[in-house]
Each structure stands twice: as C-alpha cells, then as structure tokens.
Image 1 (cartoon, rainbow, N blue to C red):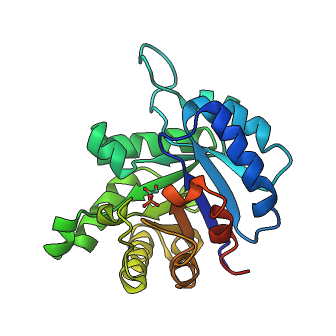
Image 2 (image 1 turned 45 degrees about the vertical axis):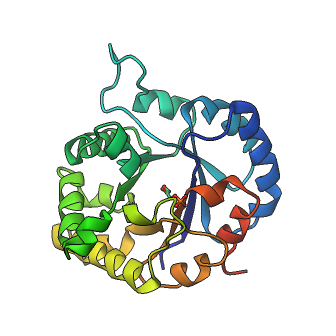
Length: 249
Ligand code: 13P
C-alpha cells in the first residue's frame, strides 16, 4: 500500500514572516495526519520554515533546484545548498517554470538526476494544455514528458520519486479535472513507468494529482486507485489545507 503524500506548493506567496505565521496556524491542524505532509516553499522561506516545523510531521520542500553543483549561475540554488538547509523534497518542472522560465523536458531530466544524487526527493510535474486535451493527445504528451524526465534514472531511484500530474487548464482556475480524467492520466503514468521499468517500480512510485484541489474535492480524488495524494497551490495557503491533508477524517 502506497502512503498518500499531500504537498502544498506555495508558489511566489508568503514573505518569511508570513511563512512562519502560516506554519504556526497549520502545525496543530495537520498533526496526526495519515498522509505524508510537505510544504514546498519559496527559497527565502526555507530557513525560517525549517525552524518553524521542527519536531512536527511536516516535511520541507523547495520549489526549484538548478542542475549544476556550484559556479557562476547568478540567482540559482543548487542541490547541495538545499540539502544542507534541510530540504527533503523539491518540485521540478512545474508548468509555470516551463512556461515563464523556459524549462524543458531536458532540464527537468537534469534537475531530477541532480536532486536524486543529493538524496532530495523530486516531485516531478507533468501535464497537458487545454489545446492538447482537445486534440486528444493528452496521454501521448504526458508519456513523452515522463520518458524524457526519467532518462538515466534507475528503477531503484525511480521508486523514490513523486510524480505530480497537473493539467495546466486546471491550475489556479477553479476548474478541477473530473475524477475520471485525473484517474485516467495517473493510471496512464503508472503504466508508462511499468513499461520503462517494471511492475514493482510502477506499484511503488507515488503519483499526485494537482490543479484546483480543495477541501471539498480532495477525498474523491484521493480515493482513486492511482492517485496517491495531491500537489496543492492556492488552498495550501490557508487553514483549510488541513482538511485536504485529513481528507479521510
Ligand atoms: P492550484 O491548486 O492553485 O490550482 O495550483 C495547483 C498547482 O499548480 C500546484 O503545483
């Protein structure tokens, strides 16, 4: 049985001061959750959030990582830096990074390999646009994203990775994918992992759904056989996030 994993992606929200306040609000509310709970926070919030969640069931995540260890890459943050700061998870290849910051399947692959090298668990994002869904190429597109992202990743490494399926048209729009749509793609991703590796890897890897997840739709989504939790944007910035984390309470 795979353990559910529910991660908040704070995106570019929360000053360091606000980040600590949000942790204080959520700490008691998410305590005792059955699922793994992760806060993926802006780089500048990593240190204060690490301190604020000490001794709780919340794990620390970053929203991005660069694929080189060090050097002249102004503004970037490396995997050894994240590791040293206590980061356990990192979001890689979010559609916003692909759209606004020119990330490609190739950079996603490099970042995935670098995170794994430093023992940081990647949360790798994939997802189709509305046009691609309407063209009927959703599964083809996502299989391509997954196949490139996992180049040179071993089966043992792949078992530790988290994949987040986030249809772009459902992000921040309030337009959640139907349970059937979400399950169909998450199941398709699992099948793709089985083809690349084997059944054991496919059965172990955790696949989240993301895109307008909230307290009222989480339980139904997370009840699907291939959906192992969620990557939550807007609703992770409020006390209500605890209702998503405790969707089964
Ligand atoms: P929303 O939950 O705000 O739709 O964002 C989803 C997302 O992009 C999480 O990474």
